[in-house]
Image (cartoon, rainbow, N blue to C red; front, top):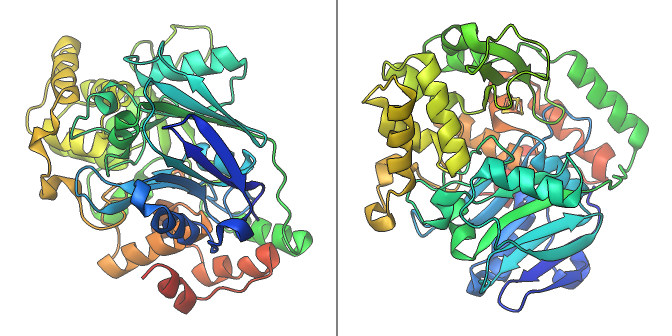
Length: 419
Ligand code: SF4
């Protein structure tokens, strides 16, 4: 279920090498291999990018990839998620896992496409926000479907709120790994590939996943999540501005909510204003702002500004929540002040969350259920939010591992792989 080799990138020398799993000697599904690789190359304090066993397949919500690295916030190894289409693109890029070591002497970005790895000059991108960076890389490579993991200005500056972004929409990087990218002068990792996956029993796999998808709830928006938390009606709060919902790869839930505030949400034509609004991808950030008494429109403007700047929307919203703002200029100034929030404030443990996974997914279910969803999700490549809100049969999900890879997994082995 992995396509291609393990890629070792050395930013000190500007070189790349490829090795088979056998040569590297680190095995395991998803995050088990990611952490194994981090430990193997731990002396170099690498960033490891990878995807789960089922990522990029027809399994429900099989969108999840990950970045493993040392969090500048805690000094501990942490994992940040690659959702939307980035995790699936990692899987299909032609590299099973990517290990990035060293520090470049000038800004660069990594361009991974169909099993080819190029280190590109990013001097012209340094200082530019995530929206500009995504557009520039797509334009340079002539391909609008490239997935861009980028380090915005807050990441370049080493802000304590830094977070890498996926395309335009921010990410669940609550561990500050975007700042770890910025410190290495790694402006972005751009991904595109047409890789083919080869399940052990393709027919059985396809049929089982179609059955699971048919039984999956397809309720768009954040409703199931806010109900699970006993939180307020975030969908109703956003509703007057909602233009459409968008799922991550293969997810029936489509919680990502595109809102328009620069033109009426009822305008369907794609040739309206250039930047009509933002896609709200962080339920936790929306809930913090709503709970703090923000009106939806300025709150969404604040989330857009954080996504552009490379600020973790969960921690940023928590900082902003207590002082609701209304006018766009005030919102922009408040987010700009967060962008430069210097590393001197690190660590502030109550704002970081704890442990390997951080607070990207709000505290749904009991702590044990939350942790189990993360373990299972990061090994298989299934979104933990989906696991916690959909009621999907986790036994059936584990049962996909046989037809996918020929290796059976059970909950005991999962706990062993990610204690
Ligand atoms: S539940 Fe939401 S965040 Fe998770 S995969 Fe589905 S659309 Fe993405």
